[in-house]
Each structure stands twice: as C-alpha cells, then as structure tokens.
Image 1 (cartoon, helix red, strand yellow):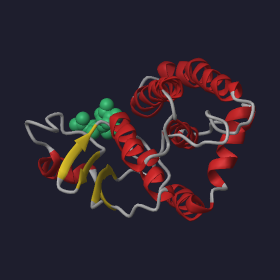
Image 2 (tube, rainbow, N blue to C red):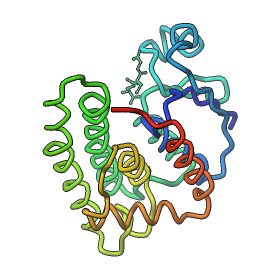
Image 3 (cartoon, rainbow, N blue to C red):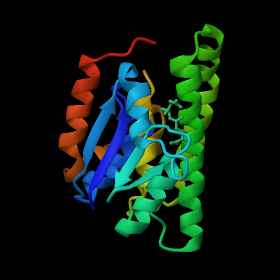
Length: 212
Ligand SMILES: N[C@@H](CCC(=O)N[C@@H](CS)C(=O)NCC(=O)O)C(=O)O
C-alpha cells in the first residue's frame, strides 16, 4: 500500500495517532504531511474533493491514490484490510466499535472543552467530572476480559490504540488511577514495534508544549 497521511502539526496524537500506530504495528510504511495552521487553507485543497472527501478534515489518507477521511471508518477500513486490530466475530466487532465510539466522545470533549474552550468553568467541568466518567467507563470495558490487558484480552484492537492515544493527549491525566487503563498503556508502550515511535513522540511533546 502507498499511504500518505495528512495530519495536523500539533504535538498530540489527536485523531490520527491511532492510525499511525496501527500502520507501524503492522509494519506498513507510510508518509505523513503535517499541516500547520498557516498552511491549512492551501493544503486543504489537496485532500478535499466533492465526492469522497467533501468535508475536508484531518486526518485524511491517500491510499494508492484514493482519498479516505473520517478517523473511525479509516481505522475500521485498515483493520479489515490488514486483517487484525478488529473483533474476530460480529459480537466482538460490535464491542470494539462501541468502545471506540465512547473513546471518540471523550476525544471530542477533550478537544472542545479541554483544549479549545476559553471558558474556565467548561474546562473545569470537563477535567473534574466529564473526563473521569469516560475514563471509568473505558476502564470498566477493559476489565471485562480478564485475560487482559486489551479490550479483547490478549488480542489488540484499534479501540485499544485509540484509548491509549487519548490517555496520552489529555494533559495531566493520571492513568494510574484507573487500573485497567494503566495496564493497557503499559502493554501498548512495551510493544517492540511501537517503543521507538512512542518514545520519540513523547520527547517531541515535551519540547513543543501546548499551553492550555
Ligand atoms: N469526524 C472527523 C472529524 C475530523 C475533524 O474535525 N478534524 C479536525 C482536526 S481534529 C479538522 O480537520 N478541523 C479543521 C476543519 O474542520 O476545518 C474524524 O474523526 O476524522
């Protein structure tokens, strides 16, 4: 596969981090075009078409010349093409999709209230009340398969990678307060395929700190 991922240039995993982790873990090479806010209007025309990607958002992937947008469907598409990161039957596939949906709800709120909002009350409500509810729910999902540490026990899914990226993006999120999330983070970070990328990403984040 010839893959180019259009992403934002912010030092967060955001909506594209789990996609990169899937590709790296599956040893699929890709190129990345990180778009700065100043480049946005011009760059957008490269991946916005009236038929396949009319909304013109990030991330968008160009795979073998064809455009794909919307992060969750991209993860599902890659999972199907690569033959892993998904449930093996219809029930487990549903579970993975449902958990990924909860994770994206968390991410949407994190972006809107945690990062973008200028309202201190909205930020406080998010970090003190809303975020813990998502974290508890995801921790509880992860507790169900006691073989752990992933949602499907020993099998990794795209939902695990998405949850991982959000725990890392949320500033000051104390993952060790949630046993199962903590175990998942440790499992992802100790995958030999991912250690180098994740260590480099953490370093970059420290250097390019985003003020809230
Ligand atoms: N549902 C979409 C949301 C994509 C989205 O809103 N991306 C943001 C960046 S996080 C974006 O491109 N914003 C710029 C814009 O919409 O013009 C997905 O999951 O990919």
